Image 1: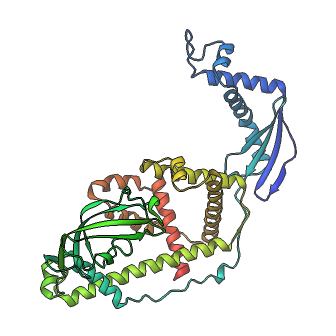
Image 2: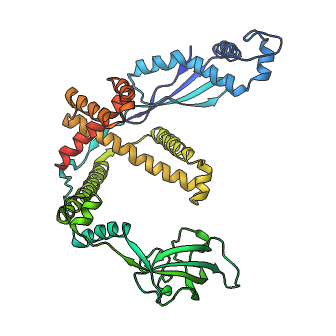
Image 3: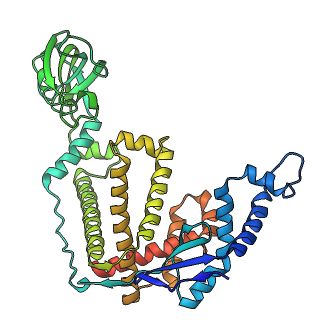
Length: 425
């Protein structure tokens, strides 16, 4: 029988045990482990599981046998320890080997952390008034007008508001072409702020077939890294100058393009759209502020093992996202100029916040007895199914049944929404 030292309480939710196994017990478990590992091993001339132990040892890493030995020894021991001390782990135990002969293991068990909420009743997230200014309306109307603009060739020099078609190339101070700065037949409206600052202004007073050379410094935050803060001399040849005409905002224009029955009605629709978007952004801001306030109000001692698990989850999530983009975590670290050390610090900080918020929310739900009813879940499921493409609804309905992972995820989401709604008002 193994020898266990008295339990050591590292914190309210962490418990440490030291378990020593006798030589005979360890040897017997190792023999069983060897058989189990060997059952899937193929050795030429022998059926699986029938090769001599010596040959099996030669082909299996000692760490694999040791791991299976420990698993075998702990199967009953761990269960009895948990029952004896009335512990309810929320994570697989952390096991460290402190001695191999005799085999001595240090086991750390993590229970659900103790959570308290401090100052929750004082949380108030103010609601800002949503105002739609005329400039926002004008910007939206102007955007639509520009999508339906017409142009007409003119023989005069270009002025602000004209569309200029040009060929250009950028050169360094030695006169050599810089990669990524050449374009042919490029059309730009002067004043649209499409190109880097100063470029469009340099086109004013140029006519068809006019050529001009000028030097500009690229912005500090330009998307192409090799051009940031770099002076570049541009050689520009104008190919065409066109006058831009925007359509008048008339009832006929609005009707023709199916926007509304009249210009007045369309303006009201635009205002409603802008207002709805501003209200959505404001709601999102308040929800984020509320969740951050809940996190700060949550007092919790987080076990390092819990943070380790959350870090692994974050890395897995990031890996899955990057895989869809054809990238690896290592490549992403290089692109974002992160070292593995700084990345780990970021992950641990983010993991701590996520755990703190998650347990804070659970505590609120428990104290306020917030839960979604069966009827509310039925409405939520029906809403998800209706919002999906018709060809997916049958499959989705089969997945969104009580007890399924997808159903429980939706239930958790709706429970959080109910909590947020109640706290924001």
